[in-house]
Image (cartoon, rainbow over all chains, first blue to last red; front, side):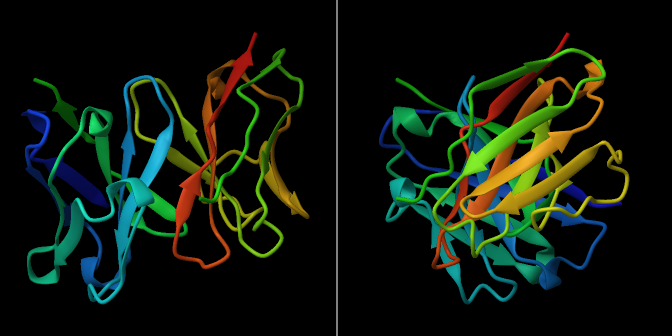
Length: 116
Length: 108
């Protein structure tokens, strides 16, 4: 059974940093693109970033370029999102997801709140 | 930046056909994917590559694409199909992915 479990969310002040992690199991992690998708409270889904199987290609939505970094550790079956210079508008549930097109499995999400 | 446009809401009676559209300039050359999200839950893929249905998705869900518009059709919509639906695709470069704004489907 495919499982994606996010962790690392929480309350952070504007300008602060946070690192999200996603533990993957039930599939060959190193064979898949992986993505982060977020959803602000009461709003729609927003693709944030994705990363190729070997980490050689990474893509980001314009609003997070230069602030967020996606990475992975295939030996640990883990996906990460380093978030720096956080803004109020980054407040959202962040989902770890398998694939890029399509995304076929999702975690349950971790809430990031940026507020003073 | 690239955008996918969906109607904010669609409403049908049980047993009727619901159609949700998604328009985007790159859709003639890029696949559309559709997700269902029920309140408080993670999204579920219901259509991939314009018209393919993942295993476990009821046959009443179908997809099509023509020109700059993709369409999700729910034939004989049921109350349990009430949810938000999102289309998902990529721009012409294939590197920037985007979700449509979402469509709230009401079945009552």
